Amino acid sequence: MFREPRWWYHYWKRKGHISKGLESAYRKIDSSYLYDNREVAFNAGEENIVHRYKINLFENYALIRPYFDQSDKGYVIPIESTSCNYGGKRHWFLCPNPKCNKRVKILYLCNMLFLCRNCLRLGYSSQVREPHMRYLYMKDKIEELLKRKGGDVYTRPRYMHQKTFDELRDKYWDYEDKIDQYLMKHYPLFIE
Ligand SMILES: [Zn+2]
Image (cartoon, rainbow, N blue to C red; front, side, top):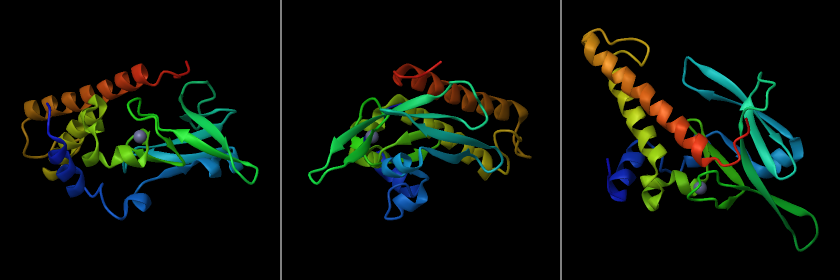
């Protein structure tokens, strides 16, 4: 489904994603903080299901993986360093959105994605047409509907037909899969 950027702008604005409170509303990672601390832990997920992750710093990338998972599964965010005039170095993330890759100091956590501020201000750019953004939107839409009716993706709303609920729930997980697939394909440095 294609929608005009203007439409997305209003959608995200309504959801409060475009506001002065942008920075405080999101969990974020700061590249210089990560450099000083080498490891940062954070929680992500919904109200009921929260997963703990950590970000470890390596020479020129940050590795994000589940906190209690000792394997190397995870994805990386490339890091670039630049020299300062007065000595020392500055460290930057490259936005993981393959269509953006902007050099930024701070990345924001949006669902399970770390994105730069430019990407989150969706109304202003063509990033809105990225497939995973659409899937995120569709997924949110289903979740909103279920919550409005008094349920969620795990619990059928009382006055909803089982068949309707099953269909919505299946779609929800389909979108989840699509987001994962997209990420696996487009995060070229994914480590197995
Ligand atoms: Zn970006």
